[in-house]
Length: 78
Ligand SMILES: [Zn+2]
Image 1 (cartoon, helix red, strand yellow):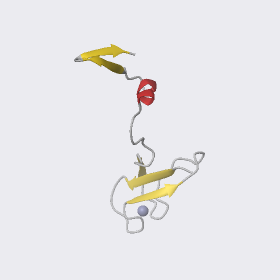
Image 2 (cartoon, protein in one colour):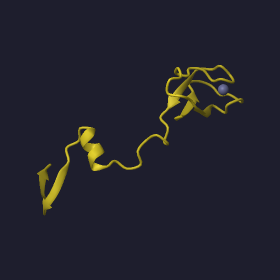
Image 3 (cartoon, protein in one colour):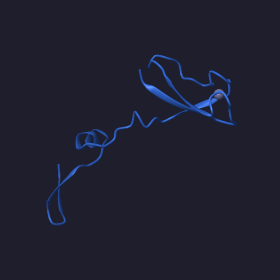
Image 4 (cartoon, protein in one colour):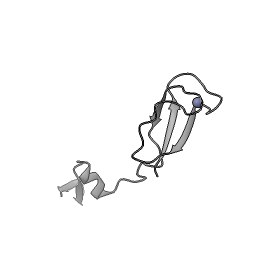
C-alpha cells in the first residue's frame, strides 16, 4: 500500500500536527479532510515515491533526449 503524506491547507491542528502520513490503497478515494480534525488537507508529494536517481532509460521514457559523449565536446544523439 502506498504511503501518502498530507498537510493542512490552512491553519494548524493539535491532533495531526498539521502534517501526517497515511497508508491507503490505490483504490481509496482522495483524502480531502484530516481524519482527526476534519480540516481540509492536500496531498504532499511523498519523497518515498520519487525515484532516487533518474536512469537513462527512465529519462528516455520521460521524453528527454539522451546524448552519448563521443569525444571532447562532441555528443551523439542516441
Ligand atoms: Zn488534523
